[in-house]
Length: 89
Image (cartoon, rainbow, N blue to C red; front, side, top):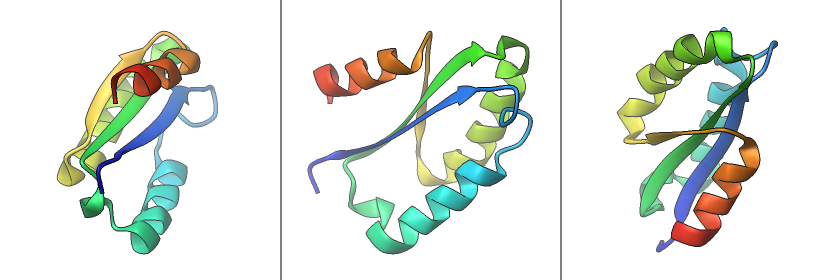
């Protein structure tokens, strides 16, 4: 496929200390669509509103998603990731 797989997430007060939900969602997606068919894989990570957990959340995402060759791009808001993917991918 000549399209990119983009995942958008942010550091909330509820999800940024572990990644169970995003891993479960991703694994379900991968079973149906096989991510190897995408030209690139990107996670857009908004460090807000819980910026204190940014480093932890980033490292957890990197640890899991690096095995699938995901690039992680840090953004200042979710909309920034949406705009980036529309303009550049």
